Length: 148
Image (tube, rainbow, N blue to C red; front, side, top):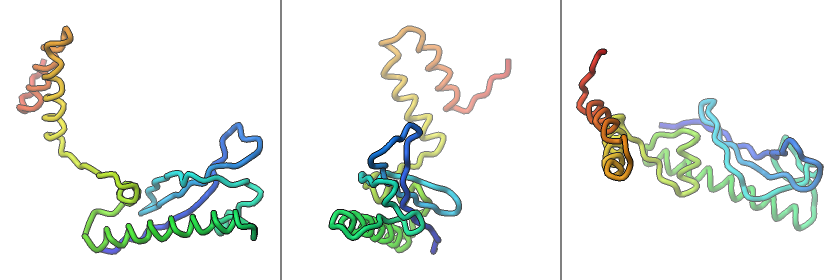
């Protein structure tokens, strides 16, 4: 299943920005949903070409930064290609997490309730008032609905 996506590099100046380098961010967009991550690099706004998403200049520093951004772009495209080949669900967050090496865990509601209940059970003896709360969560898990 092929999914179109876009990749954009942009400067993100803080509201109180006066001068100096502004951080460069990378935005991944899939079906109008965005996910952003910092590149860890910065650039002076006067040297940034917004349309190209790259740094203007012929100095070694500019060439190095543009090369770094090109490498990032290639890594994102490769990540997307691997996800397409493996048939994974593709969205902006999934591409970002796969690129960063983080695992996305999808839970059902029942799994989330079970996980929460096991954590609450560990706290019941330690804190007052949790026993009644815990009973309500077990009722939720069992699917019993009480109307008052």
